[in-house]
Image 1 (tube, one colour):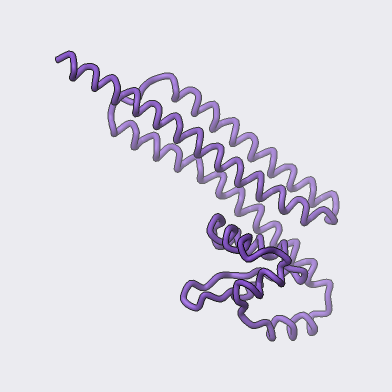
Image 2: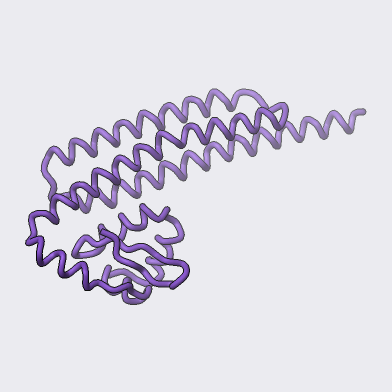
Length: 194
């Protein structure tokens, strides 16, 4: 009977440790990704007007509010141990629900940056731009690395770490002509995306 009680306590402690570590790792990874994404595009949009900077600052403020809310919820949940798997499932569902607003904010940032890029492209001669985009062929990983001015390892690392839309946005930030690139698993080539 004593052995069963000890093993139950250890299982409860293990659930608590795993849950706390999972919350902290998830929150820190989300924060790191958002900060990395924002830092990269804040540098890229440094030449934009004050309106652009204010919009990005507003979005950053909203993300900080969401992060604070997540941390306070996480800290309040750390007080008690998880008594059974049902509660663990509920916590996971809660984390998924907390990720949704962050995802929505990141998509808003991406849309905003894409719109800024489109407005910049409109200022160029449209006929020249259309001719140049029609001639762009798919690239190998080495060719794309040369075009973006980065190493092949950097291309692979970003492609594996970022979701496809974020990888396209990363490429747009590196490409001198502002072209995004999308990887096709079937061909192993990178295709231009406007």
